[in-house]
Amino acid sequence: MTLRLGTRGSALAMAQSTTVADAVRERTGRDVELVEIVTSGDRSSAPIQQLGVGVFVSALRDALLANEIDFAVHSYKDLPTATAKGLVVAAVPQRQDPRDALVARGGLTLNELPDDARIGTGALRRIAQINALGRRLHAVPLRGNVDTRLRKLAEGEFDAIVLAHAGLARLGRGAEATEVLDPLLMLPAPAQGALAVECREDDAELREVLAALDDEYTRAAVAAERALLAELEAGCSAPIAALAEVAEGDEGPEIYLRGAVFSPDGGFALRLSRTGTLADAAEVGRALARDLREEGADNALGVQHDPHP
Ligand SMILES: NCc1[nH]cc(CCC(=O)O)c1CC(=O)O
Image (tube, rainbow, N blue to C red; front, side, top):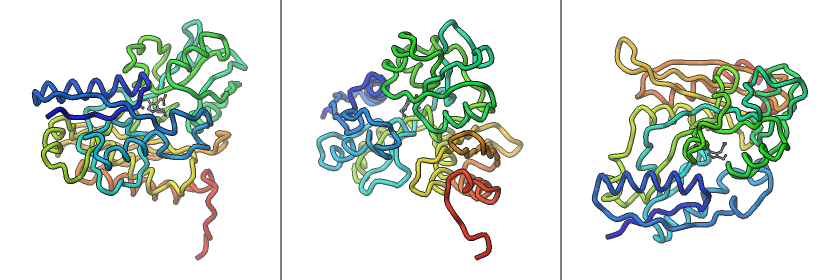
């Protein structure tokens, strides 16, 4: 029987879904058909912060639960941290580049941008980190899919834009990055560059098929990053960044997690890290979130806690 893969219609979503569909076909010999689903995030041009989490996701999840599709591919960073009842992330394929990229007119790097350069980006996390550089740069709101953002850059609205390198690469435009930004300067969003392949929890047969696409290291890295996010976020869209990397330690693979919180104006920037085993990935994330809280993360998030309870 043909497997139905639900996908958003954007070029990025199509590229991601096509890659996963090809991998499933190759491994199983099964036919995979793409079914386009329009989400509320696709219909609206409002700023992401106003739309809230999950705008690109809920229509796909509804279609899964209604048995209109069998599985769906999400950009993992767009998935809310709350788990969806009746659904499971059956595979986390190997992550590509998790970093952000700068695309600047004239081929400039971040360092080479002139004073008062206008940098287009939508995410508060990127705006905060541009401001935290302490340079005379202006972070200017920019939304739209990857093609739209590149077009606005070419039309001269901005001197540069910052976006996920993985998004560029999946559209075959990775070479247009004029600099892939060091996470020391621009720590990415939790789960950036990773995909989540989701299906119904009770679909045991498909879960087994999809498990073949799972990458253990990426799954652990994303678990650490998202546990940090879940522990810190208080329903707000405060700028939180996290990146976990897996390296071979003396006693097997080790996870190295960096996390950061910022005030939107970049005046407050707190960066910390922790290490641990892959099996403890989520606990490493929660522990780092607690560290960040202890060091004053809530000053950035705007959450008031009684210091002497
Ligand atoms: N928020 C939109 C979004 N969701 C996933 C990606 C890129 C690919 C990825 O991070 O997996 C992007 C574009 C961007 O942030 O520039």
